[in-house]
Length: 410
Image (cartoon, rainbow, N blue to C red):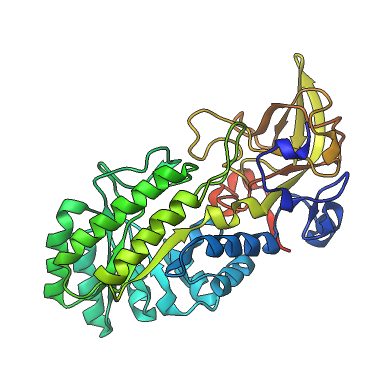
């Protein structure tokens, strides 16, 4: 087995025998960070992914970054410069987005449970609010009147279809997200009566899909639904967020997403929108697809032990820093993220079968189960690939009082 057998972006590593990030050896990065565990993000890889994406998509489709994927401020500052907008899901993310230097008119705010203080902060800043219920619209109206500021509004739609094969289905059926498509016309009328600043629609059907034809079909359905609902809008549609759903490969047997069908569908949509919704800015909302493959999680082996014939490699970090790699962030059947000995990549596929665990007092703290990664030694560095999204910020960092993982952009 070689590194090419792992389903991660080969640009993330170079050199033999150890991992390199941004042209630096793993040991050098470790020395710069100061200690393990840590996350490292390769900025050049993110830039390359964005450039390739823009070269494939029609120019009329903007690219927004979903801050939830990775809100690390130094990384977010780059995304604010490199993308066409930031999409946030909490007051905390809103504060980070504004601090990143992104203009408020390029920020949108979605989420089913926005607090009054979050709505007020969004209105005060002038960001676009993706409203998700009639109750939220009523509260927003009161807040906007109290502040004496206009409220920019888009309606998040819960569609009457689903994104098949998605890692998480965010639309279709009964969902806490968005307004059921059949209830949108009435809500649009209410928005008009209240005099709120209607701007458009947001539709996010699902995430982490590797099937281009399925994504293309959903995009076509999404635009058709938005076009139909636009007939009831109280003002011209100026913003259309078509969501995302573009996935990256994590596990054996997964293939990379073919963007060709997606690009074809988006070209059709852009051409139609130029005629049917001429004032609308179109965008995709992407997170994992932009940053997921550009990050690694690095943890050090502190002990190696045997228990009734099974070898456990014990590390100084685990699910407290990387919940997703432990299989506890939405996996139904646990699968290993791609892992390796970062200081000896050429050892992959050799050595005894081991299980890589963290320092926590729970059997859930499992980073890799029954893998061959070489003859492990205390002090070696375990690297978990595909870790640029939903890592540190999506993990229970305070569990058992361990220190949080450090982060660095290279």
